[in-house]
Every structure is written in C-alpha cells, then in structure tokens.
Length: 277
Image (tube, rainbow, N blue to C red; front, top):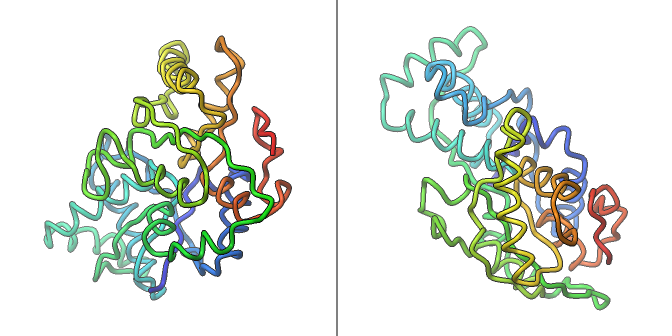
C-alpha cells in the first residue's frame, strides 16, 4: 500500500498539525510521501460555484497521485476529505465526465485512469496500524486525561459509510486505545462554522459556544480535533466565551504524547489554550 499524502492549504500553514503528524509517523514507521505539485482542492464551496472547475481541481489531484504510483490519497483536513470524496464519487459514476475533465488535464500531460480512494489520517491510524503498535510503544510516563472527541460536520457526514454519521466513534476508540479516558458528549458533529467565522463571527460564536458548553458540562480536560479549521475555531474562540478554557490539541498530538514524544516536538506550546502535560 502506497499512501499519497494530500496536505491541503490549511495544513500547509498549520505548523501544530504538521509537526505532530510528521513526528508520530516517524515513530510508528508510517511512510506517507506528499503528492508532488498538489493544488488546492477548492474546499467544499467550489462545487456550489462551478462543478466543472471543482472536478478539474480534484481530478488533477487524482491524476497526480496515480501518476506518482500512489494507491490511496490520505488527508488530514475534513474539508479536503469531503471535497475529494465528492469528486471521486461523481467521476467514478460518469465516464463521460472523466473524459471531459481529462481534456482539461491533457494540457499538463495528466489523465485520470483509476481513481485512488480517499481516506482521513485518523482512519489510517485506527484501521491500518496494528493496535499493538500503539499499546506497546506507550510511554511509561504517560499521563492519561479525560478527552472529548470533536469530529466536526464533514468527516462522517454525508457519507455515513465509515462511521455513524451523527455519533461517530472512531476517534473515541482510537484515543481509548492510546490509554485516554474518553468523554462522551452530544456535540461531536456540530458545525463550528469553519471559514464562515471570518464573515459571520456573531453567528459562529453561538455555534462554538454550544459546542464548548456541552463539552465543559461533561467534564473533559481537553478536546481532540482532527481538522485545521475546526481546531483553530475552537481554540481561538475561547477568549470570547464565558467559562474555563479547554485546550484543543489534535489527535496526532495526543497520540504523540501517549507514545512518549516530547511536547516540543509535537508543537504543544503553539496551542492558544495551553495544554498542561
């Protein structure tokens, strides 16, 4: 299995995520070369503007991965994940559409043949990495915490094929595998507003207040995030909300701590709300 990593635009500028992904992958021996010359996927908004442009963007990523001998595309961003999956679904269902997109791509010497599947890194960690890798490498100095998983609205929905669409469990089970105490709550898939926070801050504050309030009531010590937009919204919004702050590390940072990696290597100090380890 050759994993082709699609970083996406948000990951490219989000050092906290990048540092922890690379550190954990080195620790567990997971090879995940970047797709060379990757482009923006267009995020979820592109399909509502121009489907042909959207499929050209996503189609180019599929063509690059295939040309570079990659079997599977892996991403760490929920918006990239759902956008690429939507492109995959539309292209796979319509060979004529593939032909039209290939006409656009032919000017770059690219063509879509086989469409590699799209997966989130969480899915790879949970399903493809043997459970014993996580348990046997667990640090003797590991200090378990009470963690609330936050999936956001674009991981398990609209697909509903790899987890429960409303009450997903994959991250909960992965964190439990690492040795954390998982806090169940009802805000796992509530939308944080994503990039709308820039233009609709007042409305998005209400969304985040609802998420944070539910998690506080359940007594979590930290919130595990899996998407750059979700993480920065939940982390940055807390200075404008009432109540005690809760750190929002990535699931990869929590994995690294469980494996005994240093907080410095994992970028823990770059979180806006400090995580005490």
